[in-house]
Length: 105
Image (cartoon, rainbow, N blue to C red; front, side):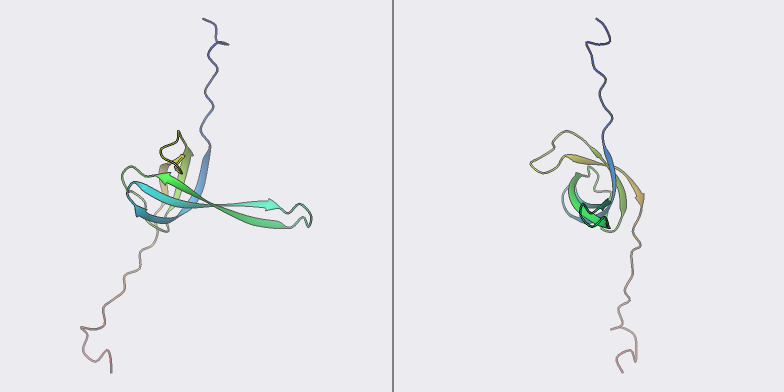
């Protein structure tokens, strides 16, 4: 069999984005921004698109910067999988001031 009979499989597309939501089980919504030139006015415009991503271990949380890769269809809307978490989001801790004396006065 020659090499021409088995075409090389192309590498999966990858995108970098920010996790918007992870309220579903094993699924996250990732917002990917890209900069394009406006056709008429030639001004740079930011375009955002949300992708539903398969997150097997529920590893990401909202605000995380992640790398996603294209894959086979996992469900009706999921065609991307989580490749890796690039940067964790900073989690803010809010203190409960109800227990502190004199806090409300």
